[in-house]
Structure formats: structure tokens, C-alpha cells
Amino acid sequence: MNKIYTKTGDEGMTSIRGGIRVPKDHPRIEANGALDELNAMLGVARALMPADDDRQVFLTAIIHELMMVMSHVATPVGKQNPKPLHVVELTECMEKLVDEVQAKTTSTRHFILPGGTPLSAHLQWARTVCRRAERRLWTLHREEPLNPDILKFVNRLSDALFAMARDEMERAGVPEEEV
Image (cartoon, rainbow, N blue to C red; front, side, top):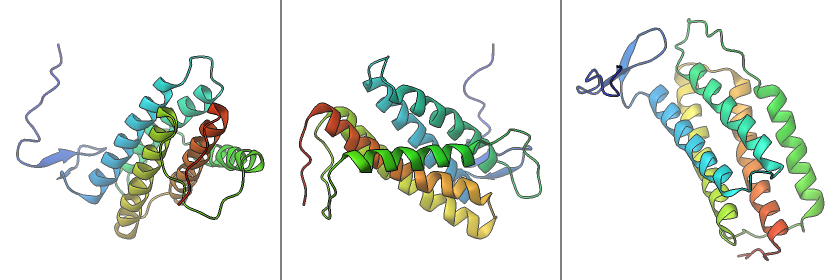
């Protein structure tokens, strides 16, 4: 039986793809940690949706793709990652989703307070975690260039999460609170 603990990180180091050891606070680990937290948040949002909700398929695809993105982020410069990415296609899907939600929700020039429904609040929370993940990715990208399509994907994901939170409020018939 494989144990969950390995004790190899007890001194503050961890492994990335290819077995290379780096400090646990290395920008690559920080970026992947934020992406991992985002993925967990998306799992919570998905769990709050009814099983037959059309948004389930979308969030499931995003969750799977974030796992692939994390694999690529864990791959150091100069190493090849054979796992295919679908970030370009999913970025296009997110742009379409944002456009559709914007077409059916009222335009606002104010900040919208998170909350309203548990699902909307969790989508807003996931949006903020997504923004942090994006900042961590840019920090890493300045030191060790990443695939620019990953950066676009994460940027657009935060927009899609905001749109989904607004859409949830619309579906639930709950008015948004503006500041």
C-alpha cells in the first residue's frame, strides 16, 4: 500500500515534473498551489449545483483542464510535457459564455457584492482565488516563461466565474447588490 506521506518534504523541498527538487515556496509551487485551491473551489461550486444543471458539464471540463494546466506549470523550462492542453478551445467557450450572460443580464457600472445564493457566493470566491492564481502565474512567467495560452485561459476563467455568479443570481431571481 502506498502511503500518503513520504517525508521527503519535511525539510521544505518538494518535487516538480522530472524529479527536480525545489523549495516549497518556489513560484512554480505557489502558482500550482493557487490553481489547486481554485480547482477545489470549483468542486464546491459544482457540488452546489443540481446534478442535471447545464453548468455541470462546463465546470467539469474546467476542473479537468486545470489538472492539465497544473501538470504543465509543474514542468520546468526545457522539459517536455506530453499531456495535451485544451485551453485555447475552452477560452473560446468561456468568452461565448460571458457574452451570453452579458446579453441577458442588466449592465452595471457598479461593483456587485458577492452573495445572494450559496452558489453565486462560491463562484465569486472562486473568481478571487482565480485572480490570485493568475498573479502567481505571472510571477512565475517573468522568471520562467509559460505557455501564454495558459495565462489567457486563467484570465478568462475569472471573467467566466464572474458571469456565472451573475447568471446564478438571475436564475435564482435574487437581485444583485451594487455598491
